[in-house]
Image 1 (cartoon, rainbow, N blue to C red):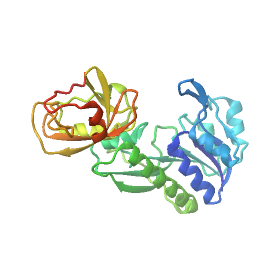
Image 2: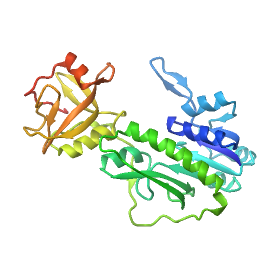
Image 3: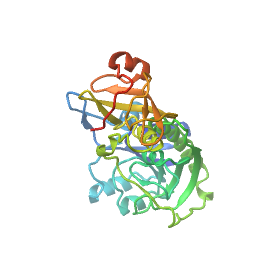
Image 4: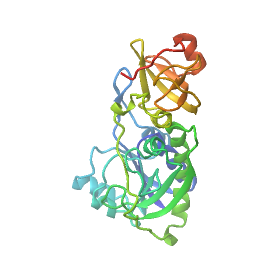
Amino acid sequence: MRVIFMGTPEFSVPVLDALVTAGHDIASVYCQPPRPAGRGKKDRPSPVQMRAEALGFPVRHPVSLKSADEQAAFAALGADVAVVVAYGLILPQAVLDAPRKGCLNIHASLLPRWRGAAPIHRAIMAGDAETGVCIMQMDAGLDTGPVLMRKVTDIGADETTAQLHDRLSNLGAAAIVEALAALDSLTPVPQPDDGVTYASKIDKAEARIDWTKPAQEIDRLIRGLSPFPGAWFEQAGTRVKVLGSTLVEGSGPAGEVLDKGLRIACGTGAVQLTRLQRAGKAVQDVDDFQRGAQIAPGTLLTGE
């Protein structure tokens, strides 16, 4: 098929590669404009732009798709279908209607659960046992269109957002190739009204660890916010991010360090911290971290 690809972050790159490997004709690649990044705050192209240019595809990164000129340019590409994954702009109705077979979105949840911006984070933070990807026909709503295909996967007990992100990216890439190959025979299934939840953007204010909460909730917060923005506590005036954890046995005052290996008492139960990062330092496993930090048993940690 003649495909317009629309995506921006690293999550979208395997999907573009899969479409190319499957032999589809990429008419153009749309992504968000380059953004200031790094210490020099120089404009940096998105992962999708860099990959598309390496593959030799024309790249467009309009600030908006609302103008008549942008919509006409999109329609002039003569696409059979647009494949959209983590693009980052609202598609006006004129854009949705332009491809002959419409616009298909790859969404990283089992719709209608976790519509919106941060479905991977929210699934882990909520303690969901499973998640997946949906291939959805796009309409004017926020992830409200009928679902053509869904692929389900379990969420591992110690899995972080970074790990699940990579698995779902590859799962979505395989699913869209399968969906395009069978597109004319797939039946769109309207999303039910029951079970709708919204995955709002992650607010950095959510990231502070409250040790008075149950260990299970703290563990999910740590794994759900890893690697970004990173759950954190403060120790000796320094903010420490926690990027990995697991549930363990233990009890004590909330926030108490129970042993040299950083087993921490929570409101109920305990968590074992496994990967940490001091401000301005590299991520370390707990043994390496403790060789430098030496947070002693009996210390009370704080998130404030």
